Length: 387
Ligand code: CAA
Image 1 (tube, rainbow, N blue to C red):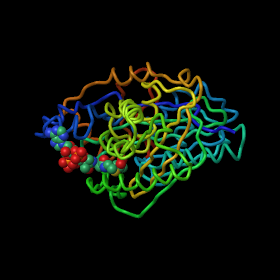
Image 2 (image 1 turned 180 degrees about the horizontal axis):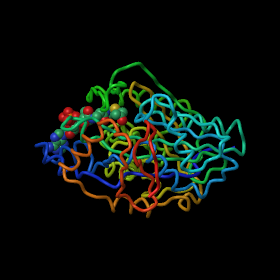
Image 3 (image 1 turned 120 degrees about the vertical axis):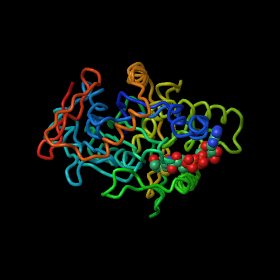
């Protein structure tokens, strides 16, 4: 039985900072950000968008096509959680009127969490034929103003429906995993911004790629040339490009060209949005599917990396007719119609985002009609509304 991705929804907030503006404000050469880091723009979540509202918006995009009778599981993956105890998924369930009988919870392992959700969902569907699972990854990446990590911030969510006979990607059996207890990036409970050893995190990412990619090829008896494209966790696009260069080492011209072209297509959304932590890998998969020209049966590699650290490599095949399930025009419009913030405006929004939510203050949203947003907090209960 084929199991895999049947729907993908994507949401990113309606504001961004241009990387040239940010470089100028930080007295950096813009080419360091545009080429050295590989980012053009960075999505900014104002106080009306948090992990929950972004997750609702990504899921609402395809909800009308879900058979709710079949839905049995909802997992919310995030490292931008809004509560130490209660699952963010319960807010999603209420907002979208999902059935009360579903099993639902939140999970965390940095940027690996959505991959963990995908694997749990796949096993769930395997064990419960004719049932489906919804998995959401939603995050706001915050390092701090004028820090080295600032240029790698971002905000957004991906939501996917996992079921048998999927319409977009059929996952293949097998994966290689690697984990170690290390301190490359983390966020203690008392901090609103991440602690990061940036250059070390970059090295560990590449070490973990080496620890999973070649062993995967050996285990599955595959060649690099068997992949139409490889998608990477993209904390910033240059990071994935470094892993890509390792993957194509020693390959023939045709393979190098195909994988390099598809790498650039997979990085297109990330260049505009920035790091959305646990959903970043899946935003690159969506970017490749919506901007590329893959054919039915093409194999895609997935490299998932979560600091702390945990990595996994696995693969899937593109399903015939997958284009009909995608919404490239909607996503192009969402990215195009964003408001360009001045650096001062972004700094004000960022600083406000670090503060505790005020009680009983109603927030208004300037997002498009239909968008879900955080309307405030009453008695420490976050209130979500649809515009
Ligand atoms: N023109 C072109 N390129 C330039 C340039 C210029 N004028 N000036 C510098 N560059 C290049 C540098 O040569 C370098 O390229 P290479 O990496 O290919 O050598 C690149 O720009 C970055 O330069 P630096 O390393 O000097 O940059 P930095 O010290 O400011 O830090 C960073 C970069 C470590 C990525 C920092 O932004 C950071 O800490 N980011 C957050 C951590 C992160 O994203 N880590 C990734 C792995 S961890 C992970 O994946 C999990 C996750 O999501 C967080």
